[in-house]
Image (cartoon, rainbow, N blue to C red; front, side, top):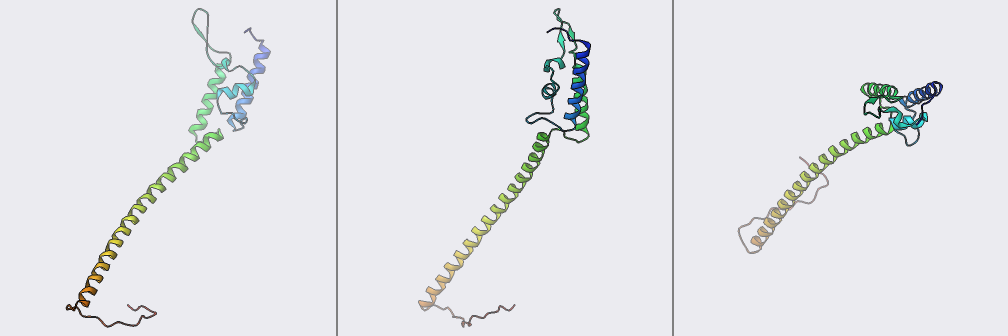
Length: 162
């Protein structure tokens, strides 16, 4: 790739800064993230221009817009540390994680409650069955002429008194 003129470099830097400002305000293109790939696409420059290069002898040299990539990363980090999420997808992911945690807690609570109710139901059924067996035994004993006294039956009342 050939060298670019100073005018082109200045124009590209202005375009990168403009795209950076838009993106950091949360104005992301459809399907875009708040990252260097999207920044390069929005500014119309090659993504590789944000990264360090190597001379033919193997020594490193900064990429033409590496300083802007570092500025972008610093500003993005500062926004995140301030609690602002500029990427709506990341905000949605955070909301979904919180909702998931809440639903998991709720499900655990409901599972515990269901287990408690199932145990209560089993105990109640066992008691009812035992009472039924006792009633049947007493009826048989009474019919066989055993020493079981019948209690007088009351007519069913519509109110229950304490």
